[in-house]
Length: 446
Image 1: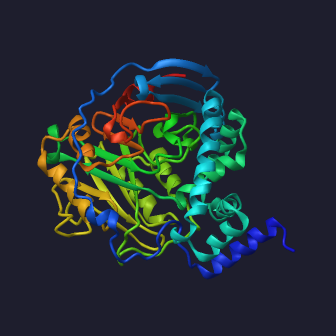
Image 2: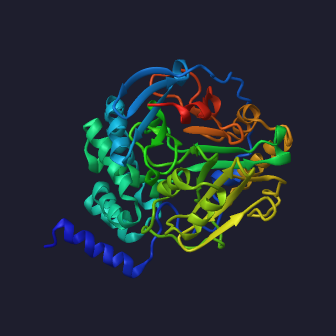
Image 3: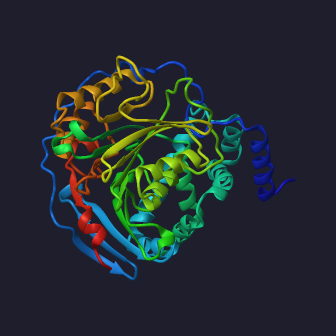
């Protein structure tokens, strides 16, 4: 009989030989589903005042300082990590957030494991990978997936995950598995990039609204991590918005005034290429852009050259150059769009000068048109505050968390879903936003 190690490599060889896979839900859906076809309802404005209170110091260790921002039920951990290695970052992070990591990771893992197993047939995963989950369990399957992507991931990322595990005194493999989940459990999301005549004062603004599962408990421990590299090999300072124990990037800004947004595509068309489970996971593609790219051109070049995996829509905006791009992203194809050639071009997704945008998916008429309407109704007067009040709330996007970036002034606004035993509305887009002045946070000394 094959032992598990040998089985890994036999299966990897089979995968690389066949190259027939999709890295998460849906392989080739041709028709728009009910979710995207029918929701035309509009949300009420978000009238909550934006919290602008000063960070409150909680604790500090070597290479790390922990603060709390926000108030009441909308508090967020703000953690600063410093160092000359990924392990320095991770160990400080894990030490300062030990209790939170040990609460959220086991709960989230148990939830996602059960959800994936229960809905396995509907995920449209490659048959061979589905069989591995069914026969060997999700943990074994994600360990295999980690072997498929290991060669593409910077070793400092693994060093950081080791540091998190050691600092928090939690199993390293569990931390790694959590970071593999994004490749098979993508969420519906929305994004925009606005500049020039689209905004008040010509600012460069960006939206990242994450519509993902609010039942896993991730929002109980929201974290904004500010990275302060002590050496050029670790890039430049950047801010990552996530939850305790998660170092991949779904939402964030860099000290180079670059912002990142992402949408998982469940309803592609035939302009997308194929998918693969072998490549750099998209959460680390996004993180690389924030950590190492100096301009939007650097980011687009990296996306063009990297070994990509899944069907996605990415958004990158540059506050220094005052522009943004939307990227149609798959394993075998990549296309870059500005306001002049934005796709898909349809009566439910018209082009807007000085804007790129996508609501919830690629082929998603009602959600796309709602976002178009929300942008055009206040075109030329859009600010972060008006976006929070009248765009995300109107479109009803950003269940789990929302980030609105002012890339001109280097300020970020963040909201999270209601946590366990908290009060108020569930969805992040309905809740109070917290202002994070990154001019201050990137300059904050150890």
